Length: 633
Image 1 (cartoon, helix red, strand yellow):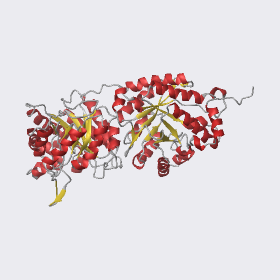
Image 2 (spheres, rainbow, N blue to C red):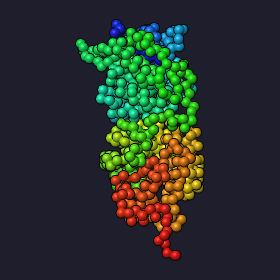
Image 3 (cartoon, rainbow, N blue to C red):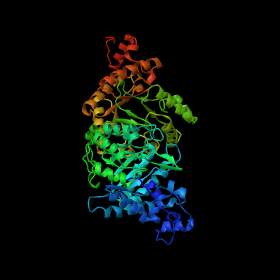
Image 4 (cartoon, rainbow, N blue to C red):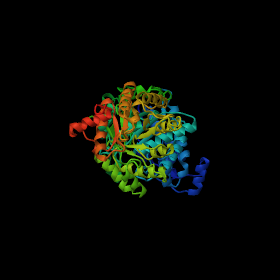
């Protein structure tokens, strides 16, 4: 399918006047816009192309016609800046819905006129705005609300698909997807979502995100039917990223490059990539990497699109996507697949931060989750939290990353303090200052949701269980699906923490039924089979390690795609520091042999077997497996 081309550079070529960018109350404006016109009293909104949907809808429709005439399958609404953040710069932040609705109507009328020869569709475009949430320039609440208002106007105006485009910050992407889903719920109408991020010349998004982090996060959301890139660069600079998406994306790929990198001539940006050159690159993207939607961004013209339609329009593409195809009327999209199929389809099985993707499966190790940023397990962290030494807590997290942690476990639950405030304050700092993903460690659903609004990428939520019968479990699973996250599931039910291997596996089976109902892929579920300490000497818990190791093996045999995790240091609670290091190391060693894929540990205090005195290792192994050959008769 072929998108249209540029709008902004095309408007610049038109002989538009100040009057075209002026709201006039006599022009039959909707009430909100009429009130704005009276307040502005003839002020020219120069540069606000979106306002043309209200002041010169004929010009906007003519632009759409120019692309539809040469064969575009999908035209984008003239609503790139239709958020309160952008419109506030022109003193009309209240017109988000009105501008979006008018933009959708302009495109809808044009598309319907040209649908006689083949189906034509309208993509409701929403751009990035001018403030980045990860840099603290705006809030989640402000961004979600204005994206929702814009999407609602586009939906009511008749778009076929919502397009989040030119996005520069993964937290912005997440807020946009959540807002689009909310708008569809409010409108009572579902349409697909397409996401396009912008990769800069240095190879990352503006805030430093790699393409793998973006793809890993976006694939958490079932309503996103295609993913790709637009703007910033030409097709040459996009080629490496297109290749990556072709090899890893489970969704159809959408690519809209600029007409090359701009050069400044006479104070204006000039784009010199010819239609023939654009076509040559797109033919390569389609044939070699399975790109399914192609088009142009800044500097591209109807002639670029005409030649693109002739070259690749309607061509069967080589997409490897297992989920859907974009070739029909968008109305029939369906993600009703099993969690096993979801897991099998994904190539990037893992989590991500604002900056990078981290696979769950580590080649030379298990997935190491740093444990020292937990108020319940680290005295140092608890003291820093009490003193509100935020920078020192960030440094502690960075130390864990430097020691080799792949993920950082963060818990701020501390009696007498506001957990939600503490968690969100810290996570906003960690989001931009730590490159590895975060595990949100909280038992409170409100803290989990607030935390998920602070973290770009795909975090992990620790934890869900059945202790209260499942009320919290279902809330957290809902948040994991809404915001895109994996979960840690504890083998706890209404009777408490399961002690035997069979009971642990039984609880795990009960939980996996719920995660699957919620639509969470098996690979995004981490089972923590838990353990009691061997340090108490209590006869009841002499086999605690045996039961946990057996449960890990049983869970992996029954549900091979799930992950398993342990808070390893629990096994040695109550022992002296030196003994704890050796016992933790031995227990972890045997748990990994049984199928443990990840562990919450202090990485620098785990010792491999070949670094421990053989006699000491033997004694420790005897403790783990409750061998009593030294007991007196």
